[in-house]
Image (cartoon, rainbow, N blue to C red):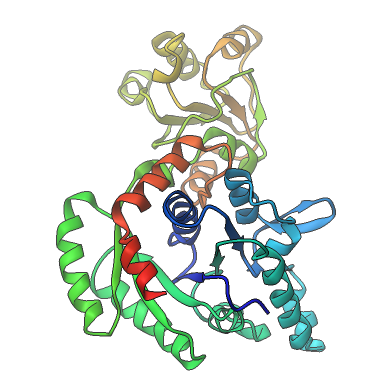
Amino acid sequence: MNNDTPRVFIAATRQNEGKTTTSLGLASVLQARHYPRIGYIKPVGQRFVNVDAQKIDEDIILMDRVYDLKCPLVDMSPIAIEPDFTRKYLQKSNYETLVTRIQKAFDRVSWEKDFVLCEGSGHAGVGSVFDLSNARVAKILGAKVIIVSQGGIGKPIDEVCVNQALFEKEGVEVIGVILNKVLPEKLEFISEFAHKGLKRKGLDLLGVLPLQPILSSPTLEVIREELRAEPLNRSSQYQNLVEEVVVGAMSVQNALAYFKKGVLVITPGDREDLILAAATTLFDQGTEGLAGLILTGGQRPSPSVARVVEALPFPVLAVAAESYRVASKVHDLTVKTRPSDTEKIGVICDLIAQHVDLPKLLKAL
């Protein structure tokens, strides 16, 4: 396997802590400052889509679309964990075959590249059941590790130490930590004391990323897909970000105070008073209007109100589920950055460029 191309393995203390955000931003900074030809691999993927009959991790699609990596997608996503993957492995172990697949995929990904970003899946122990924990995969790739964790001091450091122990057991060096989603007003405080706490454990603090609400806000397009909702109008605003969710179970007079930019209103389809109130107060305000409107309960407005809905500038969707169930699903959505999220991608690249100590990172490698 190629042991010459510089590489780093991005791990985390748990899922959805910011591994892909870190990878996306680091690729931009590394490409701009040091390594024009960047490679990327996610050896073990759990969330995938079908592309040309191949199962490709979602994050591979994102990185390839943003950076045009010029590498076959299947090489960047060599192992896809399908629902029956673990059962089949436990019945008939094929560990050496999987290791060889990862190594050959890395060789192709790193061909004529200056640097390769390797992204893990969850915490250090994820994948242990089929002998390919993140710690083991990092060892197979011969990569040093950066751990991404949530903002804070005590809890993140506790969790980092647990993960560090598993990497060290595999003989893998953790070169530092990036703390993500830190409240801006606590940035300086967290930076100072997290640095001290990590230093006591022999770890460097490589960066502290301030919380950016835009990165955890779903778009109407994401919500439409997740709910499998039916569009009731032809809106061009499916990239509207949902910053707040309001369940329209109150009177029109009380609801008016919530009708503002970034709000998703969820209400039964027969609440024509709320639908018309939204149209009356926000019609033709473009992106300054509601983020969107979801009509629930499988109920549709009357033909006259439906014509108003069709003319609204923001998306109006219909679902069969009742309002509180829909609101709960929206609240629990895992928001993943997509190639079309150009504003989010710009924010991510700026975050990494401004708040990660790249010289310290590269020196540790």
